[in-house]
Image 1 (cartoon, helix red, strand yellow):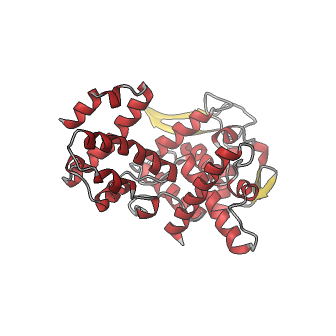
Image 2 (cartoon, rainbow, N blue to C red):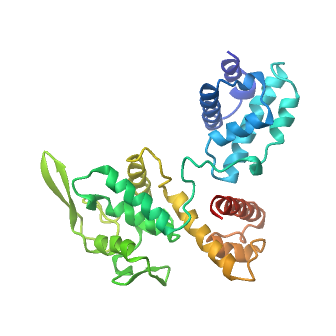
Image 3 (cartoon, one colour):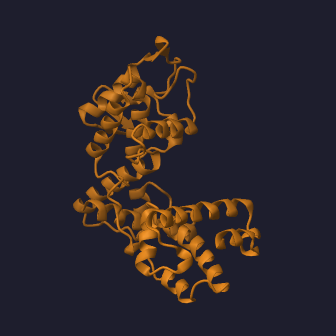
Length: 309
């Protein structure tokens, strides 16, 4: 089989172990597309077929698209070198750009607003059929803190005292979430634990802590705990929603950016200082890397607008 031969070729074996693992991951996605469509890359693809292939990968970020395209180009170059496909295959693949891709409507890649996110959260909780839905409140609070722009490192350090009866403090600024969302925050602030149905009903008591997010074992959870909690929550619906910190955080950032764009006459994302403030990232300390990252954010922001506006 051609793909097996490739894995034995110096073009592959000279890669580092990490590069080999990533390459196999990309080609596994290609294999899944081939199996679902009956089309074979080793027979050569049209541009439309390459576009369909990339769309099937559900690539949300511009950087992800170009990373997958670069990996795929190496394999296509190998196929050309051994005479399996025509040399024009490299040119056809090279002609595919991010603008050719469509937003996949089957899964949510971004959230238009906080109400759309709330409906996904609410649907997930209701589908869980949990004995005590309060067990999900820490995860739900993490989700909405992500929406308001906090990273996992910042979420684990978020204090109870920053949850007010009429709002929440985010980086020194008072935010007033909708009442049905604010209730998650106040419930988490005041909670002492939650019930779980096992061999009988068990009450899990939270460790006493100054931090808002805590558990029955930890007074101060770690960023990986946030990732794991959201991942488990996301799997309740078979990952039908993109309930992970990065998707949610960027959705909130892009939502607020769009609001600002509609209201401001000075909206200039080409300005690295302005873009840093809008996207909550630093594009100025390392101009070379910052510029690349800045335009990646801009491209992703355009995808967000393409999806909803």
